[in-house]
Length: 239
Ligand code: FES
Image (tube, rainbow, N blue to C red; front, side):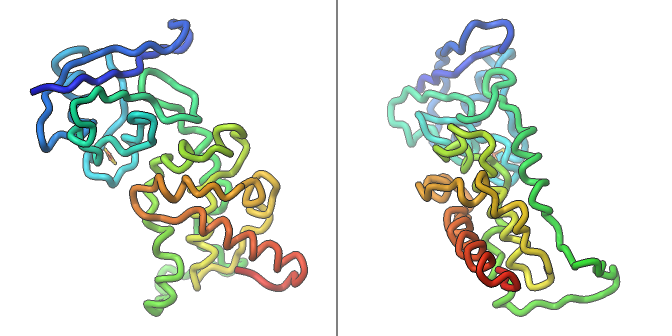
């Protein structure tokens, strides 16, 4: 038994526009979409380009658009698509480098812009110090630390697709991972309170639906809107 993959092929600068190439691959019960692509590359067409690394939903590099939805291809089984075909495209919202590979530079710059580290207000954390946290203090930020930077939330976000300057769900959730950490003394107000940051979000909520790790960026953003609004009337408040 086999299933047909329709895979977007595109070399910017050489091809006028993306075209879909069809490949028949074995329909195995334990094969993910990524296994199908690997079969194509190994057996049918070695020129196909795509990213992957861990094959177990940890590295975040295998995100693609599968039948119109942003998915981790290593965690999406071919059998989900019945008799097929399965249409595989690069993640929407990002410039294509080649075939299914997108440019992640803008995404990485957005992550770094939120100061994704513990800020101690001039006081460095001594390497030898122990900053014990209670389970409740850990719970306050733990879900945001589960993000694997797969970019599915950006691809699902209609605001980001229309406005690439929007800071976006993962970067705001990452900021909250630190803001809500009891060891952190920053609130990243200068970055997060901008028009293209939390106020750009129209609360569609697709970011949360798309997240394969059950992070809730939509909640992170709405929560920070409240923080930012409070801070504008009570400047000493934070979080
Ligand atoms: Fe690492 Fe899919 S290959 S998340």
